[in-house]
Length: 447
Image 1: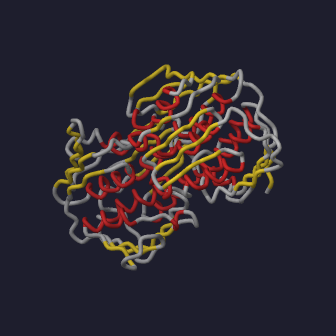
Image 2: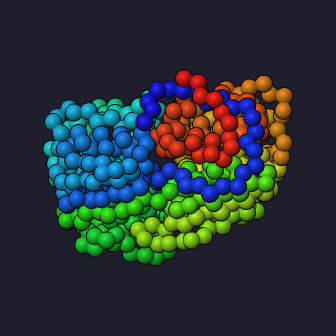
Image 3: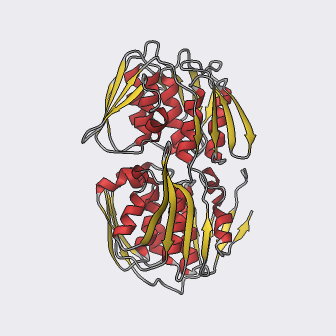
């Protein structure tokens, strides 16, 4: 991967296109596969892995914790599982989570109940700004300690629990917190029960579900997850689907670009990841799912045709299933006539950047009116934006979704953009620029 910083400069509208493509593999599932494979027994085989910066950070951390990981060929890895409670590194070893909030929260979950852990944990300049207080309070319940006390942002020291015991937890909109509790529970004594107050992503559950003695779901209006700690975990054999979040950017580009169509093959279509697609379909988007299959996850092809959509109305219930797609939804709202309303979005302020404020700043430069508060955003969309803008400069502040959304805005409007530190996109979608180029988009890279 490229670690050097570079800017992307765009100034031309993209041409019409009709293409069949594949997007990068799912980041959430790739990271979870390595983490769960590491604490399972025997050798796990993971195919179609996302080879991005966040996944490389995951591999580096696990290797520091004594896990053998072997790359068989492009996108295919073997993980030599050590079993529950077997990860280890010398005291004060530092683990660097890079830009990945998923890695940070999930691996902290595992380490909190792993014996004899006394480690330093850190991240990049974006991750160290993110509030970890909710995670820390949850891991405290298992008996883990974090130093210095009353500090809730990285860097920190983690000291694992000497006697972890299962807890009761009412989960909210954060799949990462829910997953951290699940992973901490695996090596705790007794039973942990998680009551799902909101149906957030369930990739962790889908990976563990075959371990019937360890994990089960009591289905109901609100599911209850039951984790029986200190049990044997079977090795994994997974093929990772395409990332629906990465596909959302190409979907938006196609919708907004006249006389265009795209088929995006083999994308993950887990219902808890398709809020973006549900919302735009409600707003009139010409979109359908084909060739649907169910293995560990539901996968299929996404067919998109260009066309006008009406304003988007997203209630708070959409947040857990649309978490990563709000920046590109804001782009769609800005370039479609009418008032779009997004509610229940408080947690967007604690992503790689404050996505509410960063997107508002960019849209304001385009002459798009936005009214925001901590929990809501109203966008007064236009079919046409100002044409006399000389250039818009964007600093994505380490946020891959802000950088990607900015590029889509420039390609659709033809307004020149200079997007600094575009290399941040490599955390989730290393093929993004290649895909844009294959669709006919033009840009310049400035190192």
